[in-house]
Length: 522
Image 1 (cartoon, helix red, strand yellow):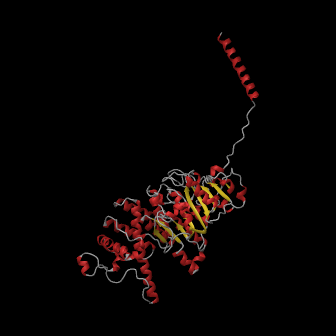
Image 2 (cartoon, helix red, strand yellow; image 1 turned 60 degrees about the vertical axis):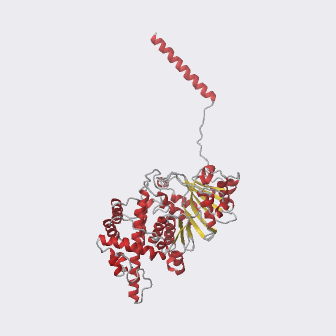
Image 3 (tube, one colour; image 1 turned 180 degrees about the horizontal axis):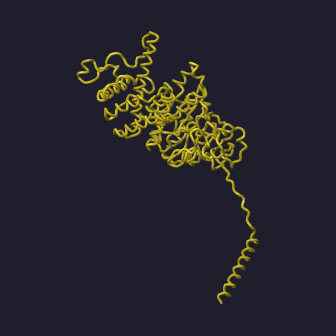
């Protein structure tokens, strides 16, 4: 989390964009992403120069070629264009605003689109890069302030970018792209990624799930970075994300890179419409919160998904997609709307039957209905399952989460200090604090799902339900309320004879009182 000077610097840059005429938060984020990418290219080039000078060898990778770019006004083109060296962040930041704007707009952005877009994950998404900063004064101000933000280490770079992504959400727009980070961390902890996993989010957005998995691997498996094969796998092969929004592809890729994942595979793909034959059974772990507010025409849906479940509903199609993408033994933790758990249509029942009978459904974790406020008030749940193709569901573990550490209204204010937030707080929570943050308890009880949790009564916050109970009526209902038993307090009622006797006594007292009143009046 960023605080103090860096936070003030980012807030100031954001305000400059706003007052300079660029008020759409997503557009601001996109322009900052371009500038950070341009800055990073210069840093990589500088590193290569230093390495070549130290070893006294030619540069292995020259990002900015020698010579000139052949662009510019007539006078500049006579000279062969602008020197490529002028396109480097460390050079153009020294020019006065008008000249800097000209270099960035007429030379740097075309360079990104034509030369750089052939290399690397993020670079591929720069083909449509356009400068939307409206004035030279604003560009100069933003370049100067970004240059002063000290983002020397990976943690700071990642935190800065996460903070800006949060600003998109808090601005009240595009919140659909962002799953709360503590919920992502919970899902990552539940699935425990391993160094050899191939991880996919088919609805990647800003790549929050992939970043979360990467951070988990860094913390729990530092051996990755001492083993050349594991290190290469981590940077080049472990992380895959799909999205069809070009802006999200750029922002998501930059988020991954700033969190220290050098070459993630973030691809432009409409997950539900395109044939996934080349991706089938490729992944060992899926983490996702897919969009679930819509329907697709049958004609627009990939044929192999329709073979799994005949439906137009995106939330059901995504579950079918996850099963297709997972290899045998692969795990998934995904967020679904509550309707998936109890919907009565043939397609709803079919997808639940597929999870319970043909694969291994491990858990259904009911989330508080305010988790996605203020963007959506829909009730949701986390499904955790393993693809087997031959069944394996024995008991399904249910957890009824009541609190996630934040208020469940539109303000979503923190109810506990930061060190007591999330699924792995720095200190143990008291009972009172547990009532405000159930996430650590979810993890603790999840570990006992095959042991002590089997003995819990169905009146508890979590419990296990045998597969036979779920399958017995053919509905495969997965809503927790179907199985949870309410606690009814015993109320002892008096017998009718006692009640009648009391009524007669009261009646006699009333009659005596009325008689005395008449005597007094008389």
